[in-house]
Amino acid sequence: MANKDVPRRDFLKGAGVAVPLAATALAGGLASCAEETTTAAAPAAAPEPMLTLTATEAAFLSACYDTIIPADDLSPSGTDCGLVTYIDRQLAGAWGGGARMYRSGPFLQTKPEYGYQLPLSPREYFAAGIAATNAWTTKTYGKEFDRLEPTQRAEALTQMEQGKAEFAGIESKIFFDAVLQSAMEGFFADPIYGGNRNKASWRMVGYPGLPATWAAKAEEYRGKKVSIEPQSIADFS
Image (cartoon, rainbow, N blue to C red; front, side):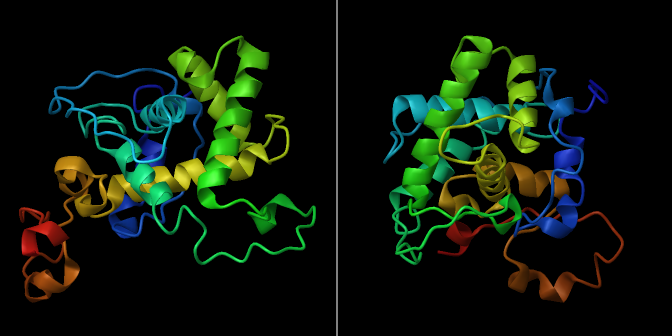
Protein backbone atom coordinates (compact mmCIF):
# COMPACT_ATOMS: atom_id res chain seq x y z
CA MET A 1 0.00 0.00 0.00
CA ALA A 2 1.25 3.44 -0.88
CA ASN A 3 2.05 6.36 1.43
CA LYS A 4 2.40 4.22 4.56
CA ASP A 5 4.60 6.79 6.34
CA VAL A 6 1.69 9.16 6.80
CA PRO A 7 -1.33 6.90 7.32
CA ARG A 8 -4.01 9.56 7.69
CA ARG A 9 -2.73 12.56 5.76
CA ASP A 10 -5.48 12.18 3.15
CA PHE A 11 -8.08 12.32 5.91
CA LEU A 12 -6.59 15.58 7.19
CA LYS A 13 -6.26 17.34 3.82
CA GLY A 14 -8.19 20.56 3.96
CA ALA A 15 -8.79 20.27 7.69
CA GLY A 16 -8.00 23.92 8.16
CA VAL A 17 -11.03 24.93 6.12
CA ALA A 18 -13.21 22.13 7.38
CA VAL A 19 -13.01 22.89 11.10
CA PRO A 20 -15.36 22.91 12.90
CA LEU A 21 -17.88 21.58 10.40
CA ALA A 22 -15.64 18.66 9.49
CA ALA A 23 -16.67 18.71 5.85
CA THR A 24 -13.31 17.37 4.74
CA ALA A 25 -13.30 14.34 2.40
CA LEU A 26 -11.16 11.24 2.59
CA ALA A 27 -9.42 12.09 -0.65
CA GLY A 28 -7.19 9.08 -1.01
CA GLY A 29 -9.28 6.38 0.66
CA LEU A 30 -8.13 4.16 3.48
CA ALA A 31 -5.48 2.21 1.64
CA SER A 32 -2.77 4.09 3.54
CA CYS A 33 -4.24 3.37 6.98
CA ALA A 34 -2.83 -0.13 7.23
CA GLU A 35 0.33 0.54 9.18
CA GLU A 36 0.13 1.24 12.91
CA THR A 37 2.04 4.23 14.26
CA THR A 38 3.43 5.16 17.65
CA THR A 39 3.10 8.43 19.51
CA ALA A 40 4.12 10.28 22.61
CA ALA A 41 0.65 11.76 22.90
CA ALA A 42 -1.27 12.14 26.13
CA PRO A 43 -2.28 8.89 27.81
CA ALA A 44 -5.75 7.54 27.16
CA ALA A 45 -8.49 8.68 29.49
CA ALA A 46 -10.58 6.15 31.39
CA PRO A 47 -13.43 4.92 29.18
CA GLU A 48 -16.85 6.39 29.88
CA PRO A 49 -19.88 4.15 30.41
CA MET A 50 -21.84 3.79 27.18
CA LEU A 51 -25.35 5.25 27.02
CA THR A 52 -26.61 3.07 24.18
CA LEU A 53 -23.79 1.20 22.43
CA THR A 54 -23.28 -2.44 23.33
CA ALA A 55 -19.78 -3.72 24.09
CA THR A 56 -19.61 -5.28 20.61
CA GLU A 57 -20.72 -2.06 18.93
CA ALA A 58 -18.28 0.06 20.95
CA ALA A 59 -15.40 -2.31 20.09
CA PHE A 60 -16.31 -2.16 16.41
CA LEU A 61 -16.43 1.64 16.31
CA SER A 62 -13.23 1.95 18.33
CA ALA A 63 -11.44 -0.26 15.79
CA CYS A 64 -12.88 1.78 12.90
CA TYR A 65 -11.94 5.13 14.38
CA ASP A 66 -8.42 4.00 15.27
CA THR A 67 -7.94 2.76 11.70
CA ILE A 68 -9.13 6.05 10.24
CA ILE A 69 -7.27 8.14 12.85
CA PRO A 70 -4.32 6.17 14.26
CA ALA A 71 -2.20 7.66 17.01
CA ASP A 72 0.84 9.52 15.69
CA ASP A 73 2.87 12.65 16.36
CA LEU A 74 -0.09 14.85 15.39
CA SER A 75 -2.72 13.58 17.81
CA PRO A 76 -3.88 10.61 19.88
CA SER A 77 -5.95 7.90 18.20
CA GLY A 78 -9.59 8.37 17.35
CA THR A 79 -10.67 6.39 20.41
CA ASP A 80 -8.38 8.36 22.72
CA CYS A 81 -9.83 11.56 21.24
CA GLY A 82 -13.26 10.44 22.46
CA LEU A 83 -14.93 9.52 19.16
CA VAL A 84 -16.75 6.50 20.60
CA THR A 85 -18.12 8.68 23.40
CA TYR A 86 -19.21 11.27 20.84
CA ILE A 87 -21.18 8.87 18.64
CA ASP A 88 -22.62 7.07 21.67
CA ARG A 89 -24.09 10.34 22.95
CA GLN A 90 -25.43 11.22 19.51
CA LEU A 91 -27.08 7.84 19.01
CA ALA A 92 -28.55 7.93 22.53
CA GLY A 93 -30.18 11.30 21.90
CA ALA A 94 -32.98 12.68 19.74
CA TRP A 95 -30.94 12.41 16.54
CA GLY A 96 -30.22 8.74 17.17
CA GLY A 97 -33.91 8.12 17.68
CA GLY A 98 -34.75 9.71 14.33
CA ALA A 99 -36.68 12.57 15.93
CA ARG A 100 -36.62 14.74 12.79
CA MET A 101 -36.50 12.05 10.14
CA TYR A 102 -39.32 11.16 7.77
CA ARG A 103 -39.70 7.40 8.18
CA SER A 104 -43.10 6.58 6.70
CA GLY A 105 -41.93 5.53 3.24
CA PRO A 106 -42.23 4.45 0.58
CA PHE A 107 -38.67 3.16 0.69
CA LEU A 108 -37.53 2.27 -2.79
CA GLN A 109 -34.39 0.60 -4.07
CA THR A 110 -32.36 3.39 -5.63
CA LYS A 111 -28.85 4.46 -6.55
CA PRO A 112 -26.20 4.68 -3.78
CA GLU A 113 -25.56 8.36 -4.55
CA TYR A 114 -29.04 9.17 -3.21
CA GLY A 115 -27.81 8.16 0.23
CA TYR A 116 -29.81 6.82 3.11
CA GLN A 117 -33.20 5.41 2.02
CA LEU A 118 -34.24 3.14 4.89
CA PRO A 119 -36.94 3.24 7.60
CA LEU A 120 -34.34 2.78 10.34
CA SER A 121 -33.43 5.49 12.83
CA PRO A 122 -29.70 6.38 12.99
CA ARG A 123 -29.39 4.22 16.13
CA GLU A 124 -31.01 1.27 14.38
CA TYR A 125 -28.95 1.89 11.27
CA PHE A 126 -25.64 1.86 13.12
CA ALA A 127 -26.66 -1.35 14.88
CA ALA A 128 -27.60 -2.97 11.56
CA GLY A 129 -24.45 -1.72 9.84
CA ILE A 130 -22.17 -3.00 12.58
CA ALA A 131 -23.88 -6.40 12.56
CA ALA A 132 -23.64 -6.57 8.75
CA THR A 133 -19.96 -5.61 8.77
CA ASN A 134 -19.09 -8.18 11.43
CA ALA A 135 -20.99 -10.85 9.49
CA TRP A 136 -19.11 -9.96 6.31
CA THR A 137 -15.67 -9.85 7.93
CA THR A 138 -16.37 -13.15 9.69
CA LYS A 139 -17.24 -14.69 6.34
CA THR A 140 -14.29 -13.04 4.57
CA TYR A 141 -11.55 -13.09 7.22
CA GLY A 142 -12.86 -15.49 9.84
CA LYS A 143 -13.17 -12.82 12.55
CA GLU A 144 -15.32 -9.88 13.57
CA PHE A 145 -13.95 -6.50 12.53
CA ASP A 146 -12.38 -5.41 15.83
CA ARG A 147 -10.43 -8.70 16.02
CA LEU A 148 -8.78 -8.26 12.63
CA GLU A 149 -5.15 -7.28 12.16
CA PRO A 150 -4.61 -3.56 11.36
CA THR A 151 -3.87 -4.29 7.69
CA GLN A 152 -7.04 -6.34 7.41
CA ARG A 153 -9.11 -3.58 9.03
CA ALA A 154 -7.82 -1.06 6.52
CA GLU A 155 -8.46 -3.48 3.68
CA ALA A 156 -11.99 -4.16 4.91
CA LEU A 157 -12.82 -0.45 5.24
CA THR A 158 -11.43 0.18 1.77
CA GLN A 159 -13.71 -2.53 0.36
CA MET A 160 -16.64 -0.88 2.14
CA GLU A 161 -15.65 2.58 0.94
CA GLN A 162 -15.62 1.32 -2.64
CA GLY A 163 -18.93 -0.50 -2.23
CA LYS A 164 -17.32 -3.89 -2.88
CA ALA A 165 -18.20 -5.44 0.48
CA GLU A 166 -21.45 -7.36 0.08
CA PHE A 167 -23.73 -6.73 3.05
CA ALA A 168 -27.17 -8.17 3.65
CA GLY A 169 -29.89 -5.54 3.66
CA ILE A 170 -27.80 -2.35 3.48
CA GLU A 171 -25.18 -0.78 1.20
CA SER A 172 -21.66 -1.11 2.58
CA LYS A 173 -20.53 2.20 1.04
CA ILE A 174 -23.39 4.16 2.61
CA PHE A 175 -22.65 2.64 6.01
CA PHE A 176 -18.94 3.40 5.57
CA ASP A 177 -19.84 7.01 4.76
CA ALA A 178 -21.92 7.22 7.95
CA VAL A 179 -19.02 5.92 10.07
CA LEU A 180 -16.57 8.27 8.37
CA GLN A 181 -18.90 11.23 8.88
CA SER A 182 -19.19 10.40 12.58
CA ALA A 183 -15.39 10.19 12.80
CA MET A 184 -14.95 13.64 11.28
CA GLU A 185 -17.65 15.16 13.47
CA GLY A 186 -16.28 13.63 16.66
CA PHE A 187 -12.69 14.56 15.84
CA PHE A 188 -13.33 18.21 14.96
CA ALA A 189 -16.43 19.14 16.97
CA ASP A 190 -16.46 21.12 20.19
CA PRO A 191 -15.28 18.89 23.08
CA ILE A 192 -18.53 19.53 24.92
CA TYR A 193 -20.09 16.85 22.72
CA GLY A 194 -17.68 14.16 23.91
CA GLY A 195 -15.13 14.03 21.07
CA ASN A 196 -12.05 16.12 20.32
CA ARG A 197 -10.80 15.27 23.82
CA ASN A 198 -8.34 17.86 25.19
CA LYS A 199 -9.04 19.84 21.97
CA ALA A 200 -6.51 17.62 20.21
CA SER A 201 -7.68 18.36 16.66
CA TRP A 202 -7.99 22.10 17.30
CA ARG A 203 -4.44 22.24 18.63
CA MET A 204 -3.27 20.23 15.63
CA VAL A 205 -4.67 22.63 13.03
CA GLY A 206 -4.34 25.85 15.05
CA TYR A 207 -8.06 26.44 15.44
CA PRO A 208 -8.69 28.85 18.36
CA GLY A 209 -12.18 27.74 19.29
CA LEU A 210 -15.40 29.72 19.28
CA PRO A 211 -14.99 31.84 16.10
CA ALA A 212 -17.03 34.83 17.20
CA THR A 213 -14.76 35.52 20.16
CA TRP A 214 -11.66 35.91 17.98
CA ALA A 215 -12.96 38.23 15.26
CA ALA A 216 -10.83 41.11 16.59
CA LYS A 217 -7.67 39.03 16.14
CA ALA A 218 -8.32 38.09 12.49
CA GLU A 219 -5.99 40.74 11.08
CA GLU A 220 -3.33 40.12 13.71
CA TYR A 221 -3.04 36.47 12.73
CA ARG A 222 -3.65 36.79 8.99
CA GLY A 223 -1.12 34.55 7.21
CA LYS A 224 0.42 33.47 10.51
CA LYS A 225 0.23 30.35 12.63
CA VAL A 226 -2.48 30.75 15.27
CA SER A 227 -0.92 30.32 18.70
CA ILE A 228 -4.02 31.09 20.78
CA GLU A 229 -5.02 28.53 23.38
CA PRO A 230 -8.26 27.04 21.96
CA GLN A 231 -11.42 27.53 23.97
CA SER A 232 -14.59 25.48 23.78
CA ILE A 233 -18.22 26.14 24.66
CA ALA A 234 -17.54 24.76 28.15
CA ASP A 235 -14.81 27.36 28.69
CA PHE A 236 -17.44 30.11 28.38
CA SER A 237 -20.11 28.42 30.48
